[in-house]
Image 1: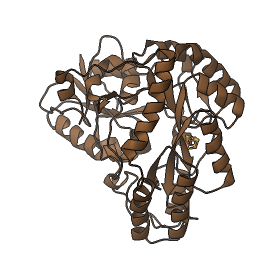
Image 2 (image 1 turned 45 degrees about the horizontal axis):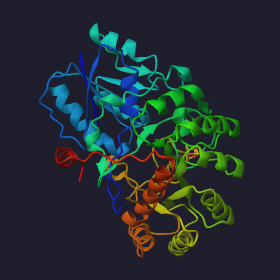
Image 3 (image 1 turned 180 degrees about the vertical axis):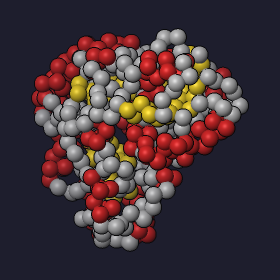
Image 4 (image 1 turned 90 degrees about the vertical axis):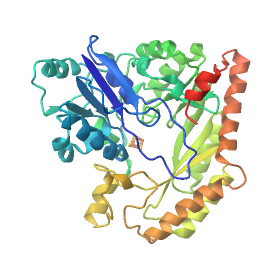
Length: 418
Ligand code: SF4
């Protein structure tokens, strides 16, 4: 049986240097399939998508709302030709009611231990319209190593640099931040994988540079201690979302290979100033994820915020416009106040204003988005700032003997993403 697994394309953030990481959800999905299913994976962002083939079943892995238009187009094409389509992933869960009519089957929830039934139903001609496992979580020790063998790694090289491999050590999040749907999807309960399983998986990845895609590592100090201590001997270097604001944990994280973190910044407080300094004092870089358009921001505030980011010497910054994704606290508030301006999935790329800001016009906010990118990167381009982060990690790898050159033979170079 051939399952064609497709990761639909979406428009990347305007103003950001485009690059592509190997996606994580499809390789986690593939790992949960029965062994006798042949997976043909296509990442539409980097591969050509042939829609004239004849797989037995098409699977769509839809992480982002902005992937939905492409997912719907692909599904329509295959279904017209009588090939059934099943969709899953974060955005499928967020939009399941709207999507039911567009796919033969919608999978809601986490996949481990559940796909045997889906495939058996399909083989017996009884694919269900919905597989509902919402808030019904699998045991964390059932999560096996991701099936990275389905990826075409030649596609994930940028200017001669092999992109990071993605991995996760936990699911869920105990916080409930206003722009985030993770607590809705993953439950407000932190669910770590057994550390020995994570270490096994890290060891098996043929890449010294990883990205822990966990929502936030700052969930439980004892767990962070255990995880980081176990990672130290592996000498990998990694990127992650926030790490605990604690000198002891940060020191351990650095020893375990912490390279830089994505840290949300949306105010100019001394707390943020100290938080960033503590990372940097421990040798850990910071990419700020900056949300523009919160209710306390006006044009002057955003100008001050950009000055502040330069003052605290963030290594890089990714600016986004606040976007009220479905099932987030901020969407509930804006809906109640009648401030949603667009429900077009194509606009939900985090670089378009889709709501009425409180202290600006939509046009002013859109202009401030461009202002923020242009001002922050005026003296030093994105490539240069990113290059410095890569220089730092290369230096560490040379010191501990883990540096590896990427084989870029002319044939491979031709196939890689420009
Ligand atoms: S933004 Fe991060 S820390 Fe906040 S709720 Fe979402 S996943 Fe948790």
